[in-house]
Length: 461
Image (tube, rainbow, N blue to C red; front, side):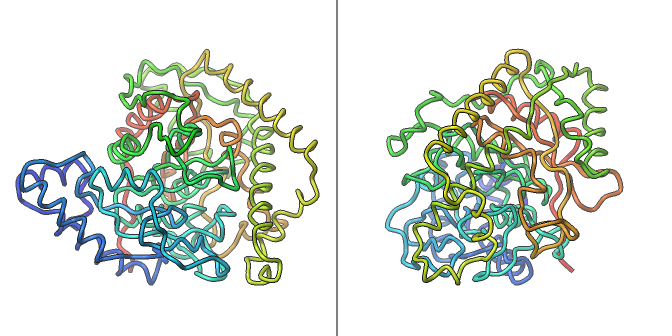
């Protein structure tokens, strides 16, 4: 389909006049509407707004004045993001359906870059879990196998990208919510350094662990979106720490790659995940990379991230009239029980432990440029569940020991998809770098793309 061409190819077609942003947008809109009854990827599709922006882009290309590499490129954003004129029900029955009066910073930047937003994508209620479903809006399904989950909470973003409706989308990640669905759907997900992409209006109930980040089908698209939306904004004081955004990746072979101690992850992982890791490590060594062994207690850092995440969910619940709690996802009420009643001393202790783990992690990046480990210990499981069948309890953190560590420590992390040999479902390989070193992740992701090209899911039967 026309809209499934790479951003680079679409720019070439627009420049030649062989295709127009309007044609591409119509193709993408038709595809979105065709797959949505099966996948439930979209919370909202707005043909009128999309075609208005596409016509403006078409005129710019006709005049030879495109405003950025994203000009005329169909995209989506996660349902939590404020878009002027669209509602943000946040996956819940208890929230307002009134249209937002302004757009969040990264949405405004996408508009300023000429991107064409088709609509908003699904997320679980208040982004509370690592899969995408809600009592109000149903189950979002994996394009590789609709019986399987997309992961979450940015599952709608990942489904739209994986299904080939758009080449890129922007989600959010407070405990893995970009990287989890990227791993489950065979897409590339980047959680930048905290504050790198402004999140406003503030405050967020997830305070200093929430990151906005792109999900894409290719490193080119991921980089273009990251470049367009990252950087300081007066609307978000947390966005000023990193200075100028560096998106020029170094030569991949110059990177010092650290392999997390196998004992920290291998015993937890399914055979398919270990196979995918072995495939990547074997290819790295064959291409001359020298792997440096790194020992970091990722599970200890994850426990801190999980506590901070639960506290964020508990803050969300406190803002909702208790009389309406019966309308919420029952899992959310259960999820916050472990942190109910915590006092300020307990919170301060967690923050001190977080600082300790962040310092220990930062020290490793004196000797390495990128650390590698699995994104998750498993691949996608059955949709409509919070945990895989046969798991004790209902806590989604039980199967997610590796991603929250890098929210609590606020460093950039990226999930890259690899298909274990003979497998239909992908596995996620996680790359982690030091603060404001996203360019190192992009460099290694580009190398991985040459070795393990991403795949769009085949059309639904």
